[in-house]
Length: 210
Image (cartoon, rainbow, N blue to C red; front, side):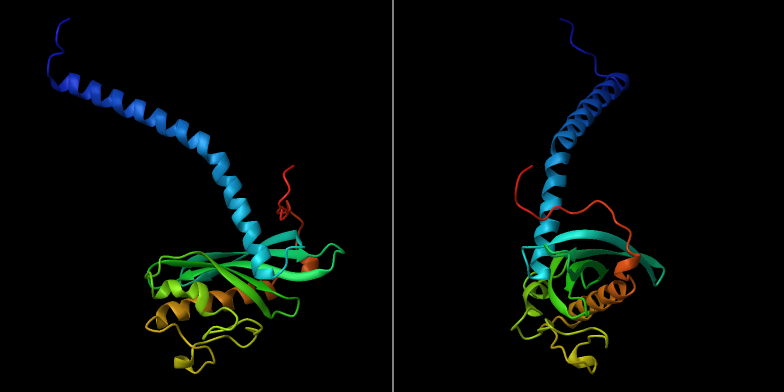
């Protein structure tokens, strides 16, 4: 068999062939994994909603989105209205994103019908491990920066700025960003009356397989 001559044309053909094959493989892998990834995302969201609302016995009956412009950047807030088994309003879980020290900080905050904070969880962050990342625990009930049970009707701020919330040690910027995300989530929650939210596909919050 004659050895393939080394030339620019042959090199281009080989590289093109490798690129095409690699692209096909990647497309196939993406097709195979996209389904399980979406299922996992839905489960993570469902678990997060139950966690921040402080109850396993609830369902998401309605969702809505509120868009706000912040320094030229459009931010989107997603509001998940929740009910118990008797269709009683339990409040809502709100997704909120703001800019932290290392990048976007995305949280999920639960509010009761009066607007008091029931709980929160971090969904995404790029904060410094061991410092800014402490926001996951720092503001929880019983911790130094406890915000559970508070209402952001009067915006929550760190004590360094004249507020009542203790900032994470050596992470004031992250603390400010976190509280801003909570305050913005509250504003989106209050801007979305229950009777004005259009019903959409509900989020499954049970653990039973269909």
